[in-house]
Length: 189
Image 1: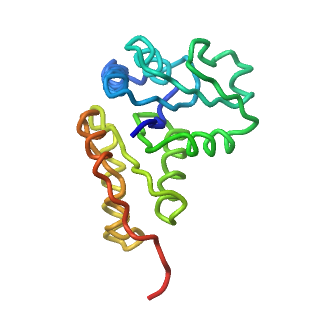
Image 2: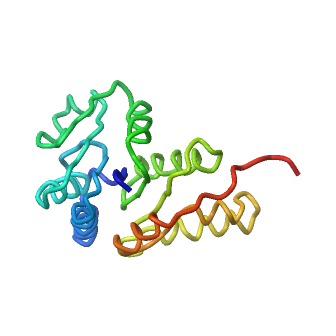
Image 3: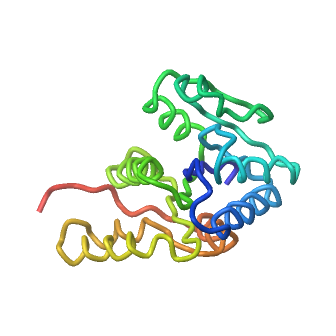
């Protein structure tokens, strides 16, 4: 792992524990010399994550659409910042730059980014690990939904296991390093 893309909230959330989790991940990325690829913002846990990596001597690549840059939320001190035209271009650029993907707590945008990249893995557009950093059990309802999808046969168990879920950033990155993707989804019976 040389570069990890992280999807996360542009707010701090209801508890300081979310920001603390972002800081822990940022320290772990810098310690392992893994470049952070993220949405390019200076606000919320996105900003806390980027600031931590930079303060710890790491590298940070931001990818931000013009619409958000114009609202003056882009981080001004990144190692590199790409400005793109659309949210779709942002996700594609992040996917190209990253060796794996982590979702920290966030809202609908975070989930949309994670699910698109997770789906891309499922259909074979990439073979990179996808994980959830389950800070303060934030993703427990989503984990239950994954299990329900498997029970109701809308998600095969081998693809359910593609969502690597840990509450400790060290354990999550360690698991990324040993990740082996399942076979590509087919529709033959």
